Length: 537
Image (cartoon, rainbow, N blue to C red; front, side):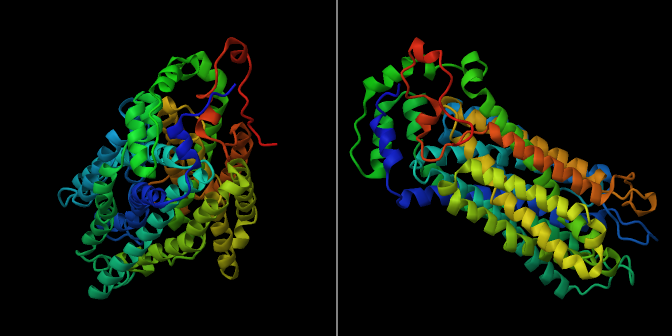
């Protein structure tokens, strides 16, 4: 039986959409802009790093990063992100969301700059310091996931909460787009200034010394948007739900939200003390009560995010390899080093502009009408369909007349990833767990996703190699080929669709209604299972 809601929480749930909502979206969203820019910009410059630091005299093809180095450069930030999601997710529940929000931003700014200032000119020193700083960059990025999602969910009203959280996450699309645009501008400027010959005409001269500045400038630019939001992050008050339900400070929660909402709110200290004494508001993450109430929900959020990110990061980090395989990007030896960056950036920017960004914002528009469950199920379904449509007749798509069709189909998988599980797996964990465990559970769910991303980043490098030894990239053993790799990704998307049935539907409900924090936890009620349906009916 539900108790009467705290006035401060009821005021937040029923508040009309106003300026502070959009301010919170921009402040939290700029962190995700930086997150996406930093995590995906590395895929734009890895081929350039191979040309600069791993050139082999007399080789017919430009230098490439060895498998172990490529895996480290692409995956080390993901490892840092996983660790940061777990650590800062836990810390956000212990110390408060705002208290640790600034730390993550400082880490992102400092490490973005430092990754572009990697020490020395020798390849070992450059790669070692690049990986070191990108790990800590990922650590800061990881903290932004649970904190931004939790802050936005606890600030939002229940009518448009899904759209607000999704809008924060949708800034990733602009971050990916910005990474492509910055790379286009920088590479075009350098290519125009230092007009180098192609590799097949002059292997050494095709990579001018100034190319070393290109990748550094691209990576360092990621610090700018994060630095601009630091002051405003520090000005945000702690969320009322944390202050009232976790810190048990009803007076401060009412005072903070009175300023934000510009209404008078009663403190209700007695009611907060009574809520704190309820068994439903005291069980821990590893308790039997949590397993009974939220165990399947946590399995649903972790498994779907894990499966999604295997496919999503495989596609995103290695777009350049897929485009090269179908001939959409010319062969490396026909271009100079900087022009190759330009061509890869152009391809990724077109994909982001035509499918990634629209997909994110379709979720923002429709999530509070269609619901999280329907969007996630639909997204996984169409990702599965389009992935199999690419994989099964793969040879057909590699033929010159059909390459544009391949790019269109490939773009549609991105569209339905973002108008689908890539957004909803971020939104739902911020809505369905109790306030005292919300940041921790979101961090666990996100870390599960990054574990999938690591598998995608490391595994796809090897799996997508040709089955013919003579056709593999330098240093790589034969793999299962691009076609079979795409089939595997299709199967993974299908599994994601099945695990979606474990995820509850929070549309239109208050956070306390979803978590049971406002319920009278009498013995009779405690014997009953939770009332939240896994699938809407």
